[in-house]
Length: 254
Image 1 (cartoon, rainbow, N blue to C red):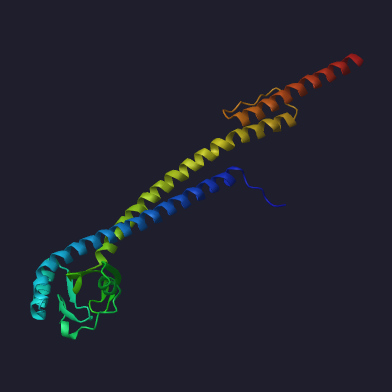
Image 2 (image 1 turned 45 degrees about the horizontal axis):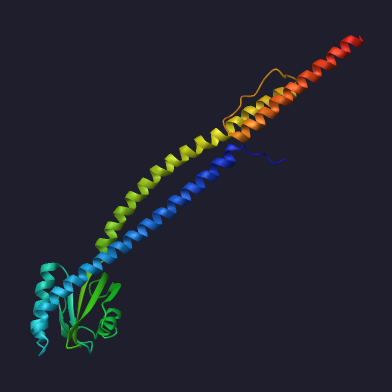
């Protein structure tokens, strides 16, 4: 015969699983939301840096002066720890803060450049084979009389975002662990609070079964348990009266 589990070990794990699942869901949502927040803030920051560079390189685009553009990119890139790249509508690079423009590939097919050439602000995150790390790119078009003269692209490594997220995730994990321990204690307390009256009724019923009708069960706080305890007490009282009546009648007959 299969051994039956105590009620507390059927209630307590359910409470604990629900609590842990809720904590995991909240932690994942918070981490994902913060990652998007950091990425959005970084994209805004890069867009502002591109605007600042636009004012300085714009005067060298009509006519085009590649050496001057490249010099400005390298100077501002070093000062702001940002990678700046200036690309012509054909995809040719004429300025870059890290590399020699003449040695760089055509950028016309880059997603953020394609978006910028369409007149919008382009944004992309991918691994840079040049810098050997993951980068966020934000590209903006430089226009004059509704014509796109060039595209300015600003980029930053996403490693600092990952470091911040790892730190925050560690703090969330520690807080989640403390909450889980507290929830486990609370779940155990609630489970025992539910099962304790039932265990008391079980003991009282065993006394009734043994013929001891003098005991009375304590009435719990909950309505359902109180009703059950009252019913058992009334049953015991009725059985006690009937047995006493039967014993009395038997004694009279003798």
